[in-house]
Length: 154
Image 1 (cartoon, rainbow, N blue to C red):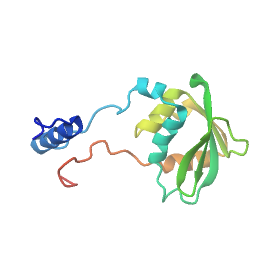
Image 2 (image 1 turned 180 degrees about the horizontal axis):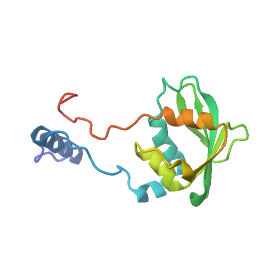
Image 3 (image 1 turned 180 degrees about the vertical axis):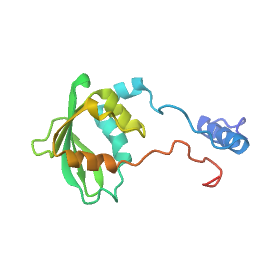
Image 4 (image 1 turned 30 degrees about the vertical axis):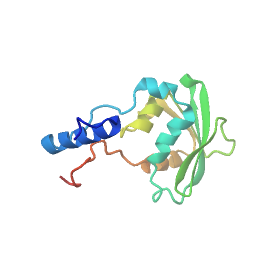
């Protein structure tokens, strides 16, 4: 069925499902988004990637702003964690932010697209460091090896 599908999306779905049934779950290696793509994404879209992974139940009582300064992209952003939602506010640091985090773009990309936390020596945190660590604690890990056609647990 996969070989005769005209739609690339359905062809890939069928062929990936067949591969999974024959060889089991195959976990992709490396990152799923290339460095070049991340460099061309607006900063707000990188924060949207991170917002998807924020656990709303664990962060439900949070109510504070986090400024991000990314010097090698010459950009800054104000974000907010409130009522279980992490969201981008604008491209100017907020004066009432509880935390201001300065990191290079590699650390930001690692935080947004992998299960690894960036090296704390490469990040400067100004303000309430406990709120920064609380934010890092509510970021859900990604499951890159999820099943396509077989039931969970197999």
